[in-house]
Each structure stands twice: as structure tokens, then as C-alpha cells.
Length: 290
Length: 290
DNA sequence: CGCCCTATTGATCCTCCTCAAAGGGGGTGG
DNA sequence: CCACCCCCTTTGAGGAGGATCAATAGGGCG
Image (cartoon, rainbow over the protein chains, first blue to last red):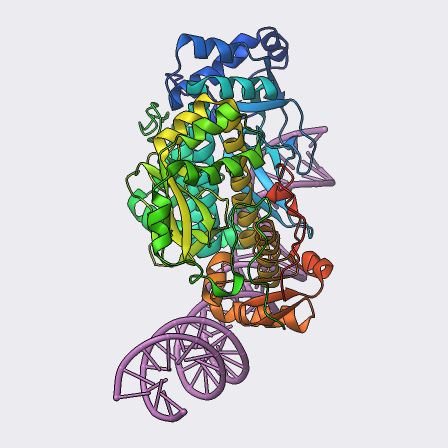
């Protein structure tokens, strides 16, 4: 299978991204420069929110005035830690991937959701006083880090901003619900297939590949943690999906051979992603290189 | 085991409730009267929101002005249906129990959450345009039914109201996340025990019994749908918890014999309920009658 | 070149599911 | 008041999906 696309056209999306070389695409000194201008950092947030609900110039300015900076996190870094005291900053992904997870006392990890550019990493904690889960960088991660209290104030005082954030938070909650169904009610092949379908559409929406071909920077152990299976069984399940001609694999790159059949096997209905609740052209497939 | 409490002191809670005789405690004609005064109906909502964040008189009046009525739903009624077009009303539980559920194409049902008095049944859809799950009355259910667009407008224009609703919605999302962990990462005994712990605390907070003794108006099949197990295995698991001396059962009444050990078996940490993010005295055990 | 992490494959075990049937318990009609 | 019925709970026996244990192979990196 040929390599998936290199850089992806930026278009109206909030990030450009090099699929095959995560973690090496910009050197450290860029960080210093970015930190200089917080309005530039918040412009990513304005674009994201505008996609959820139209903002007028006053709204946009209020958001741009929120203290913020761009920041890098290395893979494995914990941005929010379960049980932690609130910090006064929140993040939105600009590039890279992050995930939410919780752990049982016996050390069993469960991944709760996966996040791509444009996702808020702790909108879920914006109005709560204690973190109930951990947020971790899956790949090298670039985020806009902004003042929690300031954004909270803007969200409460400016209806359009509030509405955009509401839509975002509720869409995310919807994904949690679907995951309860996925790990609670589906068998292994459907669980894994469902995860692939969700990733396909969300990565596509974030400009990280096309619906039919993308790269999952997760080990099979992490996939298992996301769908409630052991890594060994994930391996066998993926092999099964390949054998059935639904997908084709090359390392962590996935090519979907038969979207219809995969969707059926996964019992996947994209309704829960609430992708249409946005002004963004989420469903336009990218012509990823090759 | 003696019967659990009869009527429960109303106190600062939003509902009184007869534990053992759900569904018979008020006759039909009450409904007609209730519908006459929507400010009275919305007063339940004001009390709930005030518990999440202090409202001033102007806030309270804005909420009271939202068109609303009190309504009954029979057990099994669907208040929101997956995939449905949005209606212009939302509900908050006044008495009785409701649950959220999703279904796979093969008909496998998964219960996503359980709701007691004071819970909003479609705050999750307040800003979304299509229902992604179904809400069903578990018992005979009394709700405040209010205009969705009106409450939305108040939530966006009045910061205190918005903040109260945010806290409520985010707390609920936190419960979804914990359920992903529960069905995805725990073994059968822990799953069932965890559900019991959650119900114990939430019922207690809603005045439906004490932490140590309460009634679950769910069949073992429904419990199974909530924790991702078959009814047969739920039965065996409950028997096991009894045999271990953690709980005592009499029909659908549960008495917790050893809260500490149950909590340990369940891997239960109440942090995720965000009960402290409120001005309500959630943790005061009721002296339920008997 | 060697190390570590991950993917892969095999063999065995066990948790939980499936199928089946026998008890309650409450409500309804005779 | 009894008979019947329906739904739920309980219990048994057997099967299967997925876990666990273990060993090999592959790939990137120092």
C-alpha cells in the first residue's frame, strides 16, 4: 500500500498536518515565536467556534482577547490528570492527537475518546472544579492554551460564543454515549470496526487523511484500551476484518476496502457525531496524496 | 428486611416521593391543575438551577417566564426518540425515574444513564438538532416540560443560568465517561456493584432512600442492559454480592451491608458524580421511615 | 549490532453467554 | 376465593468468545 498523503491542503481547516511524520514537523524555536502573540493563538479557537456557530466581530474580538499561547506537548504528556485541582488554563488541539482516559484501581485503562485538531481538551472541565479523567498527548501535540476563567466569562457573556461552545460540548457528550454502547453492547469485531469508522470520519474532518485511507498512531494495546479488548484479541480481530476484505492494513495505516460492509459490520451510524451541526464542510473527502 | 421508607421529607429537595408504591401516589386530576400555572412548574427548575449556581431574582424570573407545564408519563413512554426531529420542549424530572438508552441494529439495548428528580432529560439536546439516543420513563414519571428555545435563550443571555446549566450538563457527561469505564474495563461483579453504588448516592441525593437502603425499580434484564451483561449473569452476580455479605436483597430492594467493601469491590470513587459542585446537601443521609 | 517495544501466532483457561426449565408473585377473571 | 396467566427471578448444563500465558518475529533507534 502506498504511503498516505503528505501535507494536507489547509483550506478552511484549522490545521495543516503531515500524516506520516508526526512529531518532527516543526522545530522547537517555533514555540517561542508563537508565544509572543496570544491573539494569533486564539484565532484558532475563533475559527473553530465560528464553524460551530457564526460569531460576529465583537464576539470574535472577545475570544481573541482571552490570554493564550501555543504550546507543544510530547507524546505521553498528561495535560489533565484525574483528581487534580483545576488549573487556570484549558487547551484546544491545533495539531496532533490526544486522548481521554480513566483507570480502574487495578490499573486497567479505558480510553474514553480520541481528539483531533479543533477539539477542546477540557471544555469538559470548563465549569467543573475537579478533573474526573486524564487527558494525554497521543502524538506530539500542539495546542492553544488559554485562560479557563477568561473563556468561561466570554462563553457566559456572549451568547454566540456560548452557543458554539455548547454545541461542541454536547457533541462530545454524544460521542461518550456511543462509546458506552460500543463497549457495552457490541462484539469484538463490531467494536473495532466501529472505532475505525469513527476515526475515518473524524480524521477526514480534521484533514488527517481521507475516509478511505488514514493512519492510526495507536498501538494495538491502545486500540484495545479504547474498545475494551486485550491487545491480542485486537490483533486477531483486525486480522479478521482484513480477511473479510473490509480493510487492508500496512503497519498502522488503514485502507478501507469496503466502506458499506465495514459500516454494517460496525453497526455504525454517524448521527452521533453531530457533524452536520456545523457550518464546516466535514464530509468532503480529501484527495490524499498517492 | 423491613420495607423502605414511605414518604420522604421534602426539605430543600425538589420532590417528595413514595418509594414502595411508585406509580400510584397522585391521581390524574392533579395533572390538569398543574398545567394551569407555568411559573409554578418552572419553579422546580429554578430550585434545581439555584442548587448548581446561585441565581439572583432577575435570573429566577427569566427562568420562571419560560413557557412550561407539568406532565405525567407512563412507564415505558419514550420522551425522546433516537434520530427524531427536535421538538420545542425539554423536560426535567420532578418525580419518578427515567433512563437514556441506545440500541444496536441487532436489537441489543444499552442503558446509558439513569435519572432521578432534578435531572434534565434533554439538556443534552438543548443545542443539538437531532436526538442521538432515546429517553424513556422507567417508572411513572412526572416532569416539568418547558420550551426548549426559551430556556436556550435564557441560558445564553443570563450568565448565572448559563453557568448552572453548564455545570449540570458537564456533570452528566462525566457520568457517561465513568460508564464507558465501567462497561469497558470492569468485570461483572464490579460492574454491578458500581451501578449499585451510583444508584445509592444518587437516590439518596434525590430523597429516594438512604445510601444504605433503597429500591431499584429495574428488572434484572434492565440492570443487565445498564452494565453490559445478560440477565442470567446479573442474577448470579447479585447472588454473589449477597453471598459475600456486601448487600442484602429483598425483591428489588437493596440494603447495603458493608459500604466500604462494596465500594472497594466496585472500584467506586464518587468523584465523577461531581456532587460537591453544588450548594445542595447531597450527602446527608435521610432517615427513611420504617 | 543489540535493545526495546510492538505485532503476531499458538495453546489453554475462564468468564460470561445461551438454551432450557422450574419456581414465585401479583393481577385478573370466573 | 380460586384458577390462571404473565412476567420476572432463579437454577442448571453446555458452549463460546475473549482472556491469559508464552514464545517468536519484526522494526526503529542508540
